[in-house]
Length: 278
Picture (tube, rainbow, N blue to C red):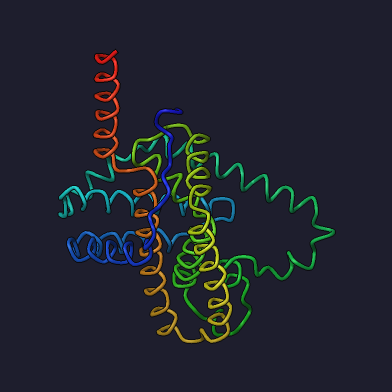
């Protein structure tokens, strides 16, 4: 593990570079990303229990990463995308999801045990964007169809989850890139990459807080189904962009598989030359 788990520091200028790369990927394969956006909508229309919020966000991250990697490797047709989804390391991703679900369950258990002391916070939960929207009792929100309420709260909630827990995207990236296969090692890889790039993590965290503030404002003005549908579509686009930024982050932290193979060959060649010299 020590020879493979070596996250790198991201070079300066990452925001402009990742914006340019994310846009270039979407321009190169618009059909693939339209298909992906539709898939993200279908996932977020479903009911997502609190304990599975982070695993669902991890699933969406894996799909975004698989799409981005497929396009970078030259595949842009729908069949290429379906093959990439099929070939994802689903078992390691499932292990990571179980680890994350257990962590969420442990946190919820602690909160439940402290319910008497945290009653005010738990009764007026504004900790997450999903909670902010799901606990609305306004007439306009109550009249929205269930699928639209799910799409809004889940897509915005998952986008905020990924921004506020960037190590999650990096952990998924470590699995998708074939760096690790065990869930706990994937989490370790994500945390190590964050530690090597603390400033970027702080920017992601600030973006998460700003998104929460924006959602709290939206929660009071979403009264019509048409407006809610527009915001839901924009939310899916935001989730996609967050995922693509996470892909760029993971790629620059861990390197693409081909890049790592080249690096290993260079290291092996250097060792061989040094051995001959001795």
